Amino acid sequence: MTTVSNEPTFRESVDLMVDRAICVMGLDEGTSSAIKACNSVLQVQFPVKIRGKIEVFTGWRATHSTHRLPSKGGIRFAPYASQDEVEALASLMTYKCAIVDVPFGGSKGALLIDPSQYERDEMEMITRRFAHELIRKGVLSPSTNVPAPDVGTGQREMAWIADTYKHLHPEDINYIACVTGKPLHHGGIHGRVEATGRGVQYAIREFFRHPEDVKSANMEGSLYGKTCVIQGLGNVGYHASKFLSEEDGVIITAVIERDGALINDEGINIEDLYHHIIEHGSITNFPGATLEENGAAVLEKECDILIPAALESQITLENADRIQAKLIIEAANGPITYGADEILNKKGIIIIPDAYANAGGVTVSYFEWIRNISHIRMGRMQKRHDETHGAHIAAMLEELTGTTVSDSLKKSVAHGADELDLVRSGLDDTMRTAYQQIRETLIENEKITDLRTASYVTSITKIARSYLDIGIY
Image 1 (cartoon, rainbow, N blue to C red):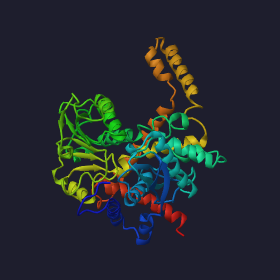
Image 2: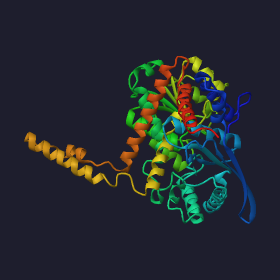
Image 3: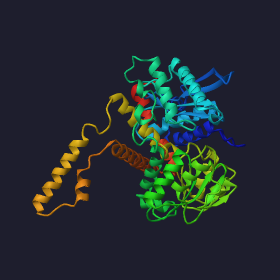
Image 4: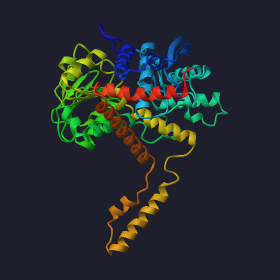
């Protein structure tokens, strides 16, 4: 985790942002404390024999809230993982789920490890051993605590964890729902890999559907032709920038990575760059842009939209005053520190906050979890019915008008929604509805001046209602 001198820790930063919202709400101290408190943190240490030597690994699973079950949150494998970071991410998950009306509590996990230092078989042993510890201690199951991929993990690790749970609990018919983000042939769902990046796209689209909001960011018109700088071309950054450039006409003028930044004011082809990185392991020598070795400085490049999609604490007290973007959308968790957030707000830079912006992942994880516990693929029962119904409509139009409907129109009318169609539709509706709720909160409360505070007020209002309805014991 990135640490910044003279600034709060990641966990403290999240709490300060929440306190700002609670102050606006006037929520009583007892309920506020109950909402903010992290319910539990489990730390495990376990040995694994690697290359003839015993290595001891440390991992965590924080459960911030169980006001809804199961608690939900990713597991990251990183050499910088810490308990503070895990607790901060768990609390963010609680607020995130409430914002987008996903009925989960918030949780998060991490293993202190550098995955690049181990072979595939070694990573499998370590992952299964970590899963075994979490399962034995009751913090991993389809009904109470459901992990998902995060930094350093993916479909592969989720498949190993699910298989470990299956062998420990063969009597649980819902075992496949113990994690989300699995491979398709192991209970995964279409659209999960792209979900967080796709959610970022849908969030920006919804922002641009409100001309007053666009004007508040000193812009006008549609997304088409807007310039964008993106930091981090991992899973989230890649999909967000790919969809925005290919489908919405956004011009990606810079891409910031660990080994520098690429700049091309005419636009960088994201797909070409992505394949270049896969082939060469680096952004260097990419023919479609100029390399700037000081990548962090490119965060300050003038642009319409800045998308930090890497790690937390990237925009801090040190560089916030030099940021020139008109709109920042936090695709990563916590990329802006509390102090930097205040500076950017005073400068009039609009921030679409992480607790809303990157909620696409947990939204589609919810769809996957529902798919798993219902034991049926989405669209299986109605797809062919819809196709037949559409074909009948096309035939009726031909009969009534005496003309022939084109094959392309027939195909469009008769198309039955498959799982990917339904996932994207559900995600789009979720991101649009959530933004509208946040916007309504902002408009109705004159004390709120920014989208982050409006997001937390929206979230905390829902959580507080849940606590008050069921009682606190």
